[in-house]
Image (cartoon, rainbow, N blue to C red):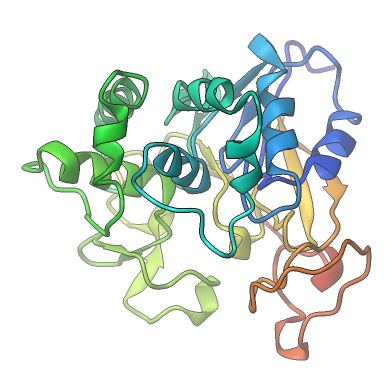
Length: 304
């Protein structure tokens, strides 16, 4: 029997029905770590945000790129885009309270079992450096100048030790919340390639496969990259299994890493970004039936 279990939960993206179904499988009082992207693209961003915030001290949350986009809109640094489903949040009577709660959430969480981030940790960073940069970003986001900082959030800055000001914050947030592929020789981040590993150019590799990564011996649990599918290795646990796209919402129990999953309705075609009515069966175009997140798109693939 596992003592003092806690659970990490993958990207929700406004899929409240799936979250409620998953929580029914978990012990009522077990601590939770949400890996970010609580909102956007799914049907119930407002209700999902309220649900997670309402869990109080039971839940610790990471900020994902979609959560940061929500904060940027609140700060006047961006607009609600056509494909966004966050507009209802700004019309809610508790909008200010929810935004205030969200901006005080984490960029990186550490436990004795793993490091938890939304997208990853830059492959050239040590744990100490990642910890320091995460705390730096959290201090700005939760501080009085958060709106000014978010004016410079958008862009493709990679990390450089000489960066300062807004570009420095942009690079930190890019690494923690947007990273997927890096150059296999230089570890330079690539922001164009967003699909599965097999479709990437030969010079690009997943950030966690970089050969000289200082944190190679530190277990990292992350979400963000649904095209990876479920990965459960000694050093890497990836649990964004495409809830929004008709895959599954995944929770992993620590310290034993048992997997819990909830089947999800398909709210969007991941290759067309066209939103569909809720339905349990959804057929993608034939060329994409091996999409790794499973669900209606094919069998779940687990990399060990």
